[in-house]
Length: 133
Image (cartoon, rainbow, N blue to C red; front, side):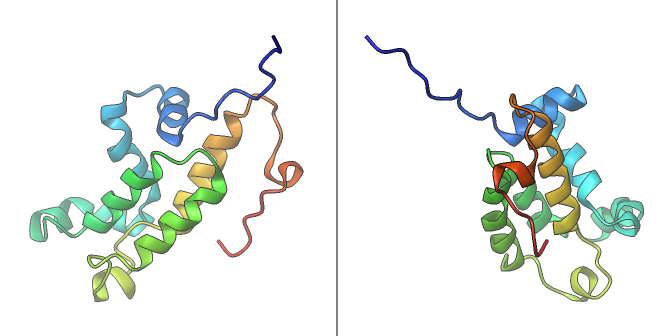
């Protein structure tokens, strides 16, 4: 018999995020969304939710879809989907940026997944690049 030399499977973003932030999975969505929102959107979010309850639907879908990623490069597909999400339209979202920031979320995912690497390598050493985001 040969020993299994394959590396252990990578953990998901939600697993690592919850562990690193000492929160339960039920708090994941609120925590990540709050961090991913532009600062002014974070301040106005309570008012926006009262006036337009589904305003952050696209952002919530993005946060949910990113939960399952295991590699930083997999986030790009989720970001592309977000940019074409039917609820990701309107002046409040585009001109006033009352939404989540793809760049902020990308940084959160990158920091979380890289901190969870057992080998301690960073993006440059592993060949993963993040140009364009």
